Image (cartoon, rainbow, N blue to C red; front, side, top):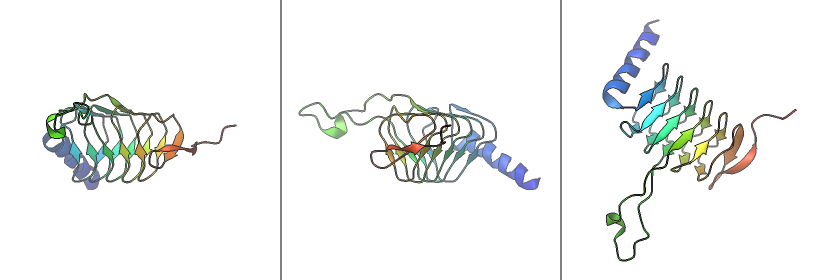
Length: 155
C-alpha cells in the first residue's frame, strides 16, 4: 500500500514539475532521466517510458504502450536543401505528427523518426530504426526496420 502511494506521488511530481506532457492518462510509469519536449507529447493510460528515453516532436502514444530504455522518438530534420547556406543556419523542417498506437512495445535503443505511425499491437525490436509506418500487430526489426513477422498466427 505504501509502495503504491509513493509511486503515485512520484508520478505526480514528475508530471507536474519535471515533464510537462500535453496530456497524460492515469496509471502511467515514467523512469528516470527522460527528455520530454514540453507540451508536445500526449501519453495514454497505463503506459511505461524507460530511462534515458528521448521524446522530441509532436507525439501521441496510445494506451498500454511500453517504451524500453534509451528509446528515441525524434522530430524534424535540419533543412539542408538551400545551396550556400550553412546547415546550422538552415532551420528545421516542420514536425509531422508521430502516432504510436495502443499496446505497442518498442525495444531498447530503438529510434522512431518524425511522422511515422506505429499501429496497435505492433512490436519494434531493440536497436531498430523505424523510418516508415508499421502495420498493426506486426514485428519489425533492423536498420531500417522491416517486417519480420506477424505477432499472432492467423487462423
